[in-house]
Amino acid sequence: MYEVRPILKICLLAVLAFCGLLLGINLLGQKQPLHMKDGIRRCLKAFPYVTAVSVLGSVFCMAYLKGGEPYSEIFKMGYTYPQASKGLTPNGTTLDVREVLSDEVLEKVISEMNLENLSPDELRNTLSIHNVKQQSGVSVDNLYVSTEYNIFYNASDKTRSIDKDILIKSIADAYYDYFVDRYGRKTEILEDDLSEISDLDYLDMNSYLQRKADAIIEYMEMCRAENSTFVSEATQESFGSVRDKAKNFRDVSLDRNRSYILKYGISKDREQYISRLNYGNRLENVEYMKNLAAYRVRISAIERYDGDITRAVLVPTRDESGEFYQSRTKIGTDYFADEANRHLQYATNNQLTIETNNYYIESISASKAMTGQRKKADEMVESLKAELVEISRLATETVKDYDSSTSNGYISFSAQDERAFARSCLKKTALYTAALALAMFCVVFTDGRSQKGKKMRMGKV
Image 1 (cartoon, rainbow, N blue to C red):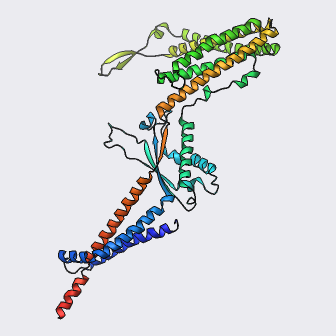
Image 2 (image 1 turned 90 degrees about the horizontal axis):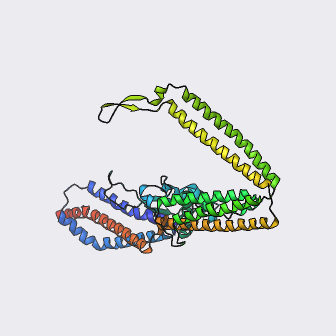
Image 3 (image 1 turned 135 degrees about the horizontal axis):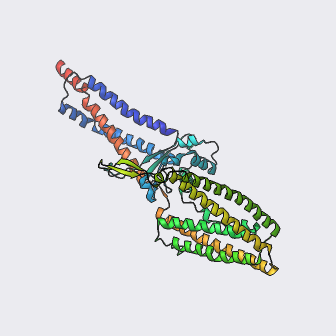
């Protein structure tokens, strides 16, 4: 049928073109004004023939349209998350609907369907995108961005053997995965089985777990700022409650574990760990000296300024009404002061790290850990891991439940209804039939040759 359809299309258009040609010839060949009564009489006489040809044309038109059903399709794609109406993706970047036909999406479709003989460009040429008109009266004050699009598929020679339904589903799945992976909320930072920490020393394990807890707390704070009242039906938790669990884990459970490790000086390799802490202290001390020197240089620069200048600098300025007033502005000493404070804070942090490391060194050096204490430390670590994994699970499921309830799945896809396709075929067939009948009636109406021949015969008589 695929090979026959182009022939049918040419024939259907050729019939209309031929009628148009005859109509043009009739109009150009008119030497006398057309008589309405004569034209109507000719149309009534030709009515059965015109009807027969029109019915035949409608049959061929319907055959052409129905024959294309396996090779064409329309499916609707709609963005269901709130930011889409502003032309944005879920993460706030500009939405580009053309990405549904990007190389990355189409290459994934070709790979999953094993279409090695098809290139992304060849597949892209069978597809087109058009937005669905939804709202009128769009203006500067009433902006509206379409969130629904129709994607048209028309098979080519290379794709005619492919099941269109499978192909469309594959395109929808590939684009959905691409969209969510690229623009959806990332929860990987919350998902961790903590299996890699088993090779760390005990204090390093504690620090690693603290960083993970801090990441969860920060993530939940961000989500809570977005919606502070949401409670997940899946976990019965809010963003604030999960955050509080993570804070309790960090401030209570981890602190208790750290205290136990330092109390007994527990370490997997005491000498190696003390050596590493001493090396870290040397690096921190270098940074401390650099920051302290930078602080002193900026303080010295500030002291060189005249005291009256550093108090205030007034600049003549106009206000909104055009009146002059004296505006205080920043001078070099302000910037020096900010930089001095920043370097002093860095130096203080360096000093705090050194003191903390020295405390760890003293505790581990005076180690009195026995087999029982180390076994208990191992049990505490496993308990901490299980607790943090559970908090991570609650955080992840709460976020996913929130996203699913607010985004409605990000994107919806719906294929064209079969009844809609049938109605479309009937509508197009009716239009073609009407156009063909009208064209033939116009040809008959303007054909004055039969009337001219009749008048000539009457003249001879």
